[in-house]
Length: 115
Length: 110
View: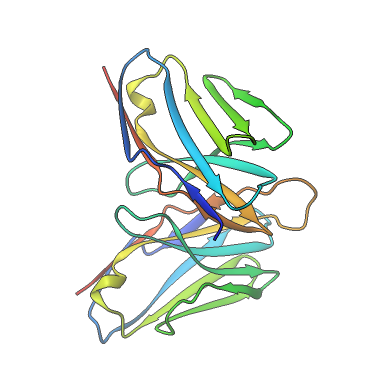
């Protein structure tokens, strides 16, 4: 399988649940990202990992907890979420550190609904 | 603060016409800008990248321009087709952190 794969594609959870989103990239990239996409708002950068090290935490509430065990896998652990956290969560990867411009390859997203 | 903006939320055009989408940036000078296409319920897909020293870039029916004086990039789709209907996003890269405009939803009517 190639590209960036996200699971699950759809997730419904209560405010007291704990769940995780998973992302896997098969492109050999060394940087991975989590974005949040809400209706009529720009993509919001949440977290960036370069070579498994977190290099960006864009003031994201602690109820979102990322984990990057290796350069190919990225998780977003969710707990005690609020209804306003309902959104499409997108994972992306890129090859950082090379000369020239880098571009993002996105997964299909995980649609999260918090009840 | 550094901003990247797409002021048109939606654009409706007739099939066969040229669609032109606008991306403006303020308070910085990007080395390059990127354009992505996003279909409903899917992740964005990279289309084109243009550097600040390139006036124009083409790929099949797509053309991107970069005007550093106007602080603007234009994205053109010539001979548009209903299959081109999607949301188009521009993005800038700041030390490998990518920031996106809010997108323009293009609707090509047959």
